[in-house]
Length: 171
Image 1 (cartoon, helix red, strand yellow):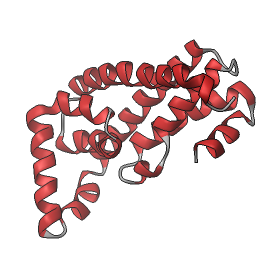
Image 2 (image 1 turned 135 degrees about the horizontal axis):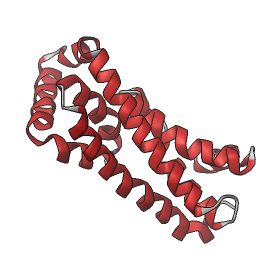
Image 3 (image 1 turned 45 degrees about the vertical axis):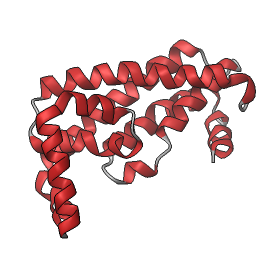
């Protein structure tokens, strides 16, 4: 999968790499549940590797990775705000889902900011937390603060992991 993704990222040169580094994390966080199938974090790591090989600058890769994470988080939040009932209804079907959904919503209401921060670093939570924050009515200003903080740590961490791994990765 990573070889295929790296090959397709480089088809359009530096522009294609930066688009993938921005778009995949954005879509991952913006599309609840479905986003878990997208390789957003992988694209960010590959962006770092490709930066090491000189296909793009590491600074541009860092910038678009942070922007993609932030834009995706905001879109996911907006989805939760707008389609709260439609999004939550399937999560309340069945006793087990209902129990987990109530627990997740309770955690977001109690520890909202920390949930946003930790969620950015966890694959499935990265796709659900933004939408759940919007659905629970977390204040936008508070959400933005935590989203910006988590994106500003997450994106550089994974770009730099890729950059350090660059010599062993696709070139």
